Length: 171
Image (cartoon, rainbow, N blue to C red; front, top):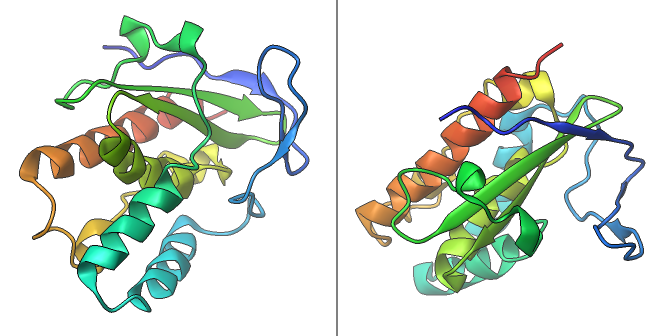
């Protein structure tokens, strides 16, 4: 399946939601120069402060649930991520500054929270950086033994989709 085309839009720390809604400040907006590994490491260190793994999992799902939302009209077969048992749709835009701006929708709150973490880690990376980023947060946070293999595969499938889509649009 070919990655969906990246659309271009401007970004100055805001996202412009569809249908004329007001811009929303993105909590994961970072300078394009911030490297993905450092972004992920900062995220991991912040969440390792939560000692109880069940509480950490709940915090991760809540944090990931705030990933940019894909509008209903874009939840189409071409945007559905293969390899996920739950229905997961992803689309991405490329800002005028060359930032990768993915959006997500799922039919499962827990899955949405978990794959949302990956989407938020990819969000606002340069397209070049996103094309080579391999997140490792589930193992680093010791969640790889707590969540099902199918959910881990879904997280990996979303990360692979992001890399493939970004690679297709590197200038």
